[in-house]
Amino acid sequence: MFKIMLIEDDETLFGEIKERFQQWSYDVYGITDFNKVFGEFTNVKPDLVVIDIQLPKYDGFHWCRMIRSHSNVPIIFLSSRDHPTDIVMSMQLGADDYVQKPFHFDVLIAKIQAVLRRVYDYNTEAISLRTWCGATIDYEKNTVTSEKGTIELTKNELFILKLLVEQKNKIVSREALIKSLWEDDRFISDNTLTVNVNRLRKKLEALSLDTMVETKVGQGYVAIEEG
Image 1 (spheres, helix red, strand yellow):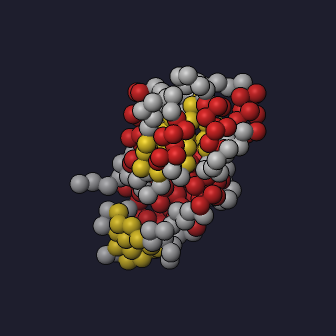
Image 2 (tube, rainbow, N blue to C red):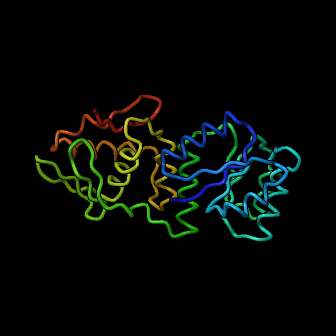
C-alpha cells in the first residue's frame, strides 16, 4: 500500500480527496501542524506528496524546496492558481505534475497512478485475477471466464475493463479513461475509446455481461455489479 501525504488546509476538500484515495487502497496522511510540515513529512516518509500552493504560514513552494533538499519523493501540486509562472515554478522546484482546481477526481487518480508507476515501476496488473459478476478476469492471460465460457480481450479492452471494474458501480469519465490509457502509453483518442468500449461489450455479450457495462451519457461508463 502506497503512502500519500496530502498537504491541504481545506478540511472539506481534504476529506473528499482522502476518501477517494482510500477507495484505491492508498494510505493517506494529513498535516496536523502547518508550521511543521517538513517534520511531519520526515516522520511519515510518504511514497508521494500532493501539496497545495496556498497554505498557512509558508506556501507550498517553500515546503517543496525543503522536501526536495532531502528527498526525491514524487510531488504533485494541487492548486486553484493557474498562472503559467506557478506551473513553471513548480516544475523548476522538482514537482512531477501540476493539477489545477477544480479538478475531476478520476484525473487526479490517473496522474497519481502514472507518477507511481514511473517512479516505483509500479505494476498496475500486480493482482492477476479479479472476480466480477460471477466471472473471473485474468489480467495476465487477457481473458474473462464464466460458466458460459471464456473470451479473449485485446490489451486496450482489458485495460478499460480493469479501470471500470476497479471502480465498479461508480462512473468513470471518458476523460479519465483516455488519460489513463495515454499515461500507460496506450495512445488512444476519444473516438478510439468509443470503438474499444463497443468491441468490449460485443465480446462480453458471449458471457451475457454486455449489459453490465453501462454508458452514462455525457459522463462516462460504469461497470455494474449487483449485490
